[in-house]
Amino acid sequence: MSKAFGCPKCKRPVANRNRAECLYCGAALPEQVLFSPEERAQRERRLEQERAQSAAFEQELTQLKANLKSKKSWYQFWKKEER
Image (cartoon, rainbow, N blue to C red; front, side, top):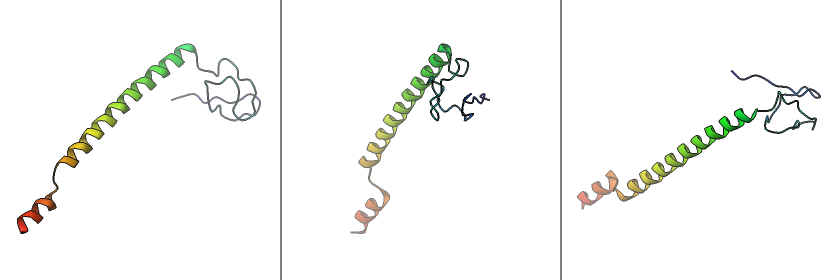
């Protein structure tokens, strides 16, 4: 479970731990609230993995759609047999 961090000035939750100032009031945030360099690197690696996975899924979906377009549907076969 993640910790909840609050702005020392306006007491609202910190919306972005990558920014050095509060998004609501603009007050400077203490260093312990911000992501550490290790946390930033870990987060960036996770995002890269998710982007790669998303791109692979998108490519697979595009390929499946192309395969479906090339196949005739059941009603097309039925109409030809009826003639």
